[in-house]
Image (cartoon, rainbow, N blue to C red):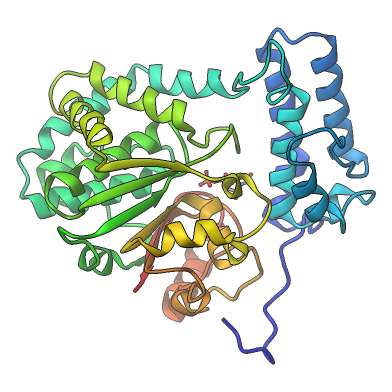
Length: 390
Ligand SMILES: O=P(O)(O)OC[C@@]1(O)O[C@H](CO)[C@@H](O)[C@@H]1O
């Protein structure tokens, strides 16, 4: 981290017309609210609540949650600086987390009654698992058996990374046959360090991101680690509730294991091994309310710190986890990843495709090339990174 005399750059706000967040609030989020409203037979109360939310985020001032919700204190604490002020003036990271909390409120996700526990994003997640092209992708896992375990491991690591682009990396096809992992478009690659941190005694944590194709790729990678003695045990950190549309909850983990089991061959073997690993305690499931909280990981609560401290390596999946890990700030891209994450308990790695303004750990030469050749490299999802520190 910068020294105390060296203040960090400002937090990213929603109100920069040139910032990535601008498009999220002016395009993506309004469309999402409308889509959720159209996709469910909600009654008048939920419809009205969704319409009110849409109006509020479009032009209104941020209002607090009612006092009777279970997490009122948490959001009052965060919102003290923002409630009563325009959504557009709030920090991007916290306000988007609050948007998802408000969406769950609007559809009565936590309210005792008929809609309690009904995931408003389930239809989207299910469609991804039912996509006919997935069968072909999962069948190509059989080809990986021909590779040397180290090559197969690297291919699976990269598949887990590119899975974050929802562009399933283990559709390896030519890549598998020629043993050429998909390394193009990597703006940083610390994968050697990641492998160095894995061993038969390693306790690994994977803070997962999206359900569906990304989680399937993560599970294939995790199976590889367990099968090849590269970890003694692995803990999956899942979301405690539906979040950011496709973030994985325990239900989504179960759905992925079931989907893997439907494809004969390697995929179903992986499903069976992981199912047994959960039963044997080698693959643990874990969640914490902090995973849907509005703060960066600099504010980890003590019980989550205690949990992560036991880990030989924590792998952070995806864009949002990356923003929470380094801080959602206007960092110069050449900032040092190890310095910015030195506060985090234990060794940490990030597997992420770039889908927002934040980027660190880029070499000056790489930065010049990216700015010249691919002006939207930070946000268009075509670039990825593997960064790690011991
Ligand atoms: O964490 P993920 O799934 O990789 O990405 C989350 C994301 O799509 O949502 C945010 C905008 O809504 C961005 O930070 C990021 O691009």
